[in-house]
Image 1 (cartoon, helix red, strand yellow):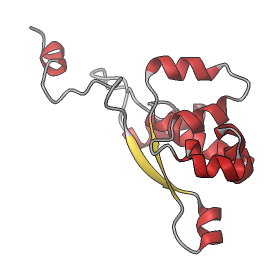
Image 2 (cartoon, rainbow, N blue to C red):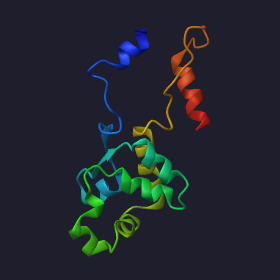
Image 3 (tube, rainbow, N blue to C red):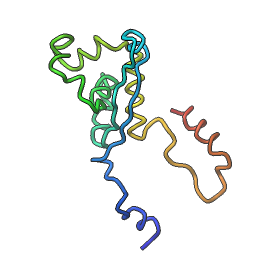
Image 4 (spheres, rainbow, N blue to C red):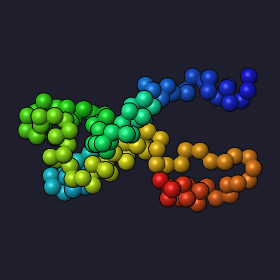
Length: 139
């Protein structure tokens, strides 16, 4: 077998449709408001969901909802106070720029908006940091 195939067949290779990247992000304005950290647990999106959302008119809002790992936006208590839908709750609690910022972080967890591949073996990349910065500028 080829070395690439050997790597892909290792037991530690995740199924990214099931084992999505997760991370926590603080919403600074709400942390200041409450006097304690307001931290959202976000997750990356599987390929099909990312494609489904990208052409929606409210893609950023739907990305926030889809990337909510803890399910807070679907909480019955939150919907009773800020609903009636999760989308309405998000719009009533997060500013437009915060919705965009959270959406971008979900996209990053999904492999977008960051360098994920670089040229290999032909000497094109001499400074990985510059290559990453250049790639981020394109996005």
